[in-house]
Image 1 (cartoon, helix red, strand yellow):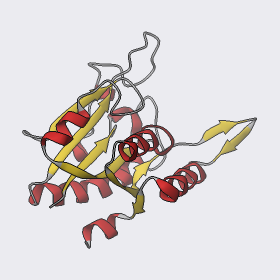
Image 2 (cartoon, rainbow, N blue to C red):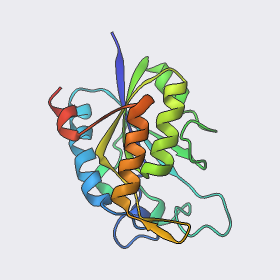
Image 3 (cartoon, rainbow, N blue to C red):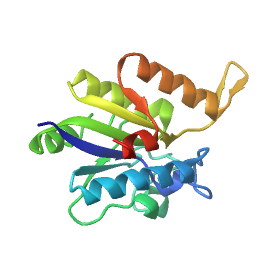
Image 4 (cartoon, helix red, strand yellow):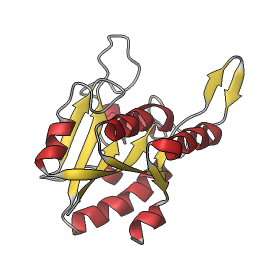
Length: 182
C-alpha cells in the first residue's frame, strides 16, 4: 500500500492581494488547494504545510513574526498537521520534511502552493530525485510575471512553462478536478 501526503507550499499572506510580494491568482489557487486539503483531512491522510521565513536582513517579504509570513487562513494548518519552516527554495533543504514523510511511510506527494517557477519546481524535482512519486496540481499553484532581458514574461506563460517542464520528466501534472475525481 502506498501512502500519499498533501504538501502545501508557501501559501503565506505576503503572496496574496495586499501582501508584500503579490502573485497572480494566489487566492484562486488557495481555494483549489482548500478543496484538496478538505479531502485529505476527511480521509485522514498526511498533510504537511511548508512556510518560508526569510533569513536575509534586507528581506522585503516572509519576514518572520509578521502577518505576511503567516499561512493564509484559506489553507491554515489545524492541530496535528505538520508545519515545516524553510529558508531555502527547496523545501527539503535544511528541513525535516523528508523525515516527516518517511515516518508516515509516504511514497507519493501531491503538491500545491507557490511559486510555480521557484519553490514548487524545486520541491517537485527534489522529491522526484529522492524517489517520491510527485503530482503537481497546476490550478492550485500560483506565480507572478517575470522580467528577462528587458521582456516581461506573463505569469500564465511562466506557469505553463514550468508545468510543462515538470510534466516532461518530474511529475504528473493534473487539475484539482483530476485529484478530486480519483
